[in-house]
Image (tube, rainbow, N blue to C red):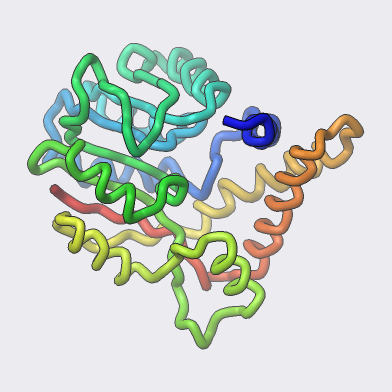
Length: 258
């Protein structure tokens, strides 16, 4: 990792310090989806939460699967420290193993690599590429195991999209596509798909509104590093696009079985 990479990571750590969401998400949606899968999961399920951040989804998984053992994986140690503190406060720490690592090559859980009943990932699959993730995660699942991930998708026809919004997302996230296209990718990768679930606008607001307030507070600091200013500028632009986008883009949860 270069010094510049570390400076960017440090900038993100400063910005998201104390925030619950590091991407669009809603623990209520997470809970509802887990409840739908409960009957098809063993009581003492082995679960992985990839790109867990500060643990909003990890904690929801632990609460809705009271005997599950969870590998919570992220590259940012301060985020994992925040997760561990909250997990201990809720009495969930003994079932969550929070470690730094690569989502494409995760470490063992309790000495066993893979063999997960459920692999979960919210607003993080983009970081290693959707195609790469689907390939890497497939062999980590037990036969009959489930994969659930959220992804930003187009929720409008190409001709109907706001030009500014379209240009932003196509530049920032070239992999953005439609739900049907993602379902085709899942099928091609060997998964059995179910109907995706579109999250509500609350999933966006839960992320962007606290972030907006945090950026406003940080903007008044005179000791901001160049890296922090750079990341803040990028996030402010993203919030501007969020304000303009309406329902043109959506957060979709994809639920697939091995």
